[in-house]
Amino acid sequence: MPRYALLILPAFNRVYADSAPRLTLAELAVFAGRGLAADVAGIEETRIGGLPYVTFETAEPLSGADMALLSNLSSVYALFGVEGELLRPAELAPLDRLSSDLLTIQKYAGKTNEHFTKLLLNVTVLASGFRLGDRLAVLDPLCGRGTTLNQALMYGYDAYGLDHDSKDFEAYSGFLRTWLKNKRLKHTAETVPVRRQRALVGRRLDVVFGATKEAYKAGETQKVTVVNADTVRAREFFKPGSFHAVVTDAPYGVQHGSKGGTGLSRSPLELLERAAPVWAELLKPGGALGVSWNTYGGGRDELARVLTGAGLDVVDYPDFEHWVDQAIVRDIMVARKPAG
Image 1: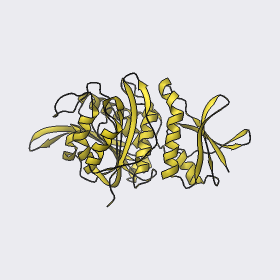
Image 2 (image 1 turned 120 degrees about the vertical axis):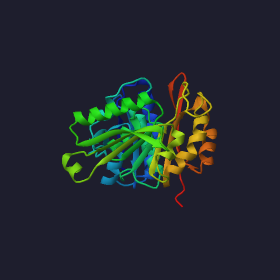
Image 3 (image 1 turned 135 degrees about the horizontal axis):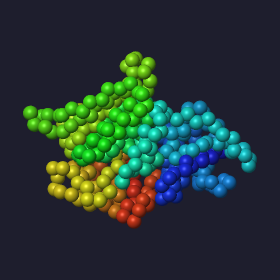
Image 4 (image 1 turned 90 degrees about the horizontal axis):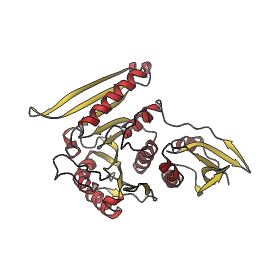
């Protein structure tokens, strides 16, 4: 049987680097079950030459399409065919269409690791009725300073977000405008007030850009829309059935709350109970919701009840739980909106 070895991408975050091989095992299992044409077996963590790899076997050699799909694993650095004691490098063809510094330039306290963000987006889309390489519309309803939005843009998707924090809204708006200018990408960008019955209910950033000047002129553009408003009011800004995927990193319980609620809470479940039905309504049939959360703020069964109560079907996935720091143990749950 053909055997392959995935070299794990080095991570500057030491804690995440320690978790990366195990998370890659789980992520590869999702790719194998929901994306790859090849039958995959024997997935395990292996050290080769002192470096961390994830190895696996297939019944037949990987096709070009399978190689391309595996190129998008969140922590893959290189892919090799194993031939005895030798490794033969395979050609990677990731979906990434923009410079990687879109993900790495921003540095701030509380930023979600970009490798983890990519993993969350991957497993959410793979749970949906759509393919990772399709042209998708992705919403992060708690977008902060846009890590999820930027990863969606890397894949060629249209990105949409909400966040009630004005400072985060302004920081992301300033960053994206500056990045587009520095990269000399043809674009338009404007921030406009949003009113309902003459009352100001939020602000909206609208960006349209092309990966090249030729693409922009031809109308081959990507869109970014971010609204500075409470996530539970998302239906006031986006139409039902607008998104192929809703992907978000829930508050970790460090005095975060939703405006218009009962105040600040250390548990993300209170926010999710109010917001999940709204988010579910925004999904297209067959779309998927992926959420990461701090398990100290609520268990899997509790979150599953919230998502099921919102009309979603929780997907049976491998274990993605991992330690972040003494106050945070992070996990992932994905649920799909029925197609019919």
